[in-house]
Length: 565
Image 1: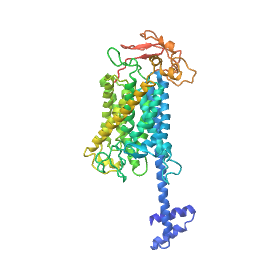
Image 2: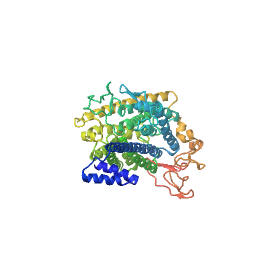
Image 3: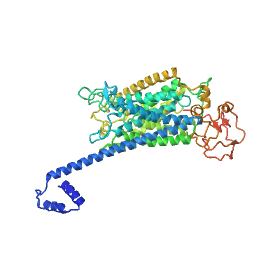
Image 4: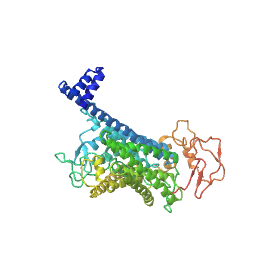
């Protein structure tokens, strides 16, 4: 009766006629409902139900588009972070690679990547048949539901993020043609296969794994609903491990930058202290975008998905903050001072570590996951130095090693109640039995083997054919000059984008010799990193010198022996 009152009342008010409402009230008072057309009432109820469903559909689509845009905005974060870590003579080159990563990923994922990731399953390994050039996504193709456009958009943003991770690992010495080939193969084949395994209907998936002939899912380990399959809610393994370990293989094949390791002692040398302002800007953009990355992985906002998204935002924040605090105070203990670069990387370590499990753990779990993620960062960075592997941005540690920890932490800290709250399809006690931990470990090892194997073959093939590395002279000159025609250290025409507005000419760079600072130093050109907008005529006092510090007057900057982690 109340529903009828609402329906009739809404229609009467809309038509400006209150007679029906008055008749309804009179009938209610007399207990006589015979005056009403219940067929019309049923039609009104169905119409209201359809309108509600359409509203939910529209909200879900809008949610995914907005979150996908946030994930895409992370490209700006990666660009600023890497620009703040590489030498200014290579800044334009690293920004160019970020730009091309996103663009190549769009074309590759549109043409074939989405098919491999979400096409019809073939043996639990790869998707086939559907969505070649998105041929199954078209206007009104959803039969009243979603047509599917937003699904591709959201997944492309993830593919672009995965590809961009590698740029930091192989920065400052890699041929741009080699990078193009890698970026295409990763986003067209290597990454989509892992997506199919974990988020499609592949053998690792928690969403209908490796279905049999009758469509029944067969998740690891038990191949029935008493197992969940690998839980990777937003991609610690599927996205970050693939990008991180691809970067690791690239760094191994291309070799360390010239001068990174002392040829006699093997000690790590700091080639450029970095621009902390750009690093901080990049990390905060990434942290902001990560809410689209993690919260958006609900893939909808209607129903209880909004509650799950809210919980994910909380656990993501706690893990990031804990990673930052842990890494920052660790730098005080290890280095004797607070180091902002390590603190910023600690934020990213916490974010990567929580990405797989953000929906299936409690806030106090997120605290410990972020803390341990920071320790993984510190230890992993030291291991790279010991192995003489040069990753200028520690990208393979932050994304690869912390991605492994994120998958393992899912099995250690998940609860069965949280798994069900996050809408995973099977109701069981896999977390309580620690079966889930075993599944997570197996899944992580498979991803490592696939990624290292395929990218190792890819990078080795590139090296043996067109070559992976630029010439030594070009590396010293800087890739901005060789690949983009920029001269660093020489005033530009105002159109340059690099930090410092250009690079010294090749013949001038050859004459640059390190000298000990003993006289006032002229301010560098406007916008030189570390100085901001200093008027050109201003004379700066000589900075205090520390043991090992050298001053390059033609470059207008110091090279300080900043410890590496």
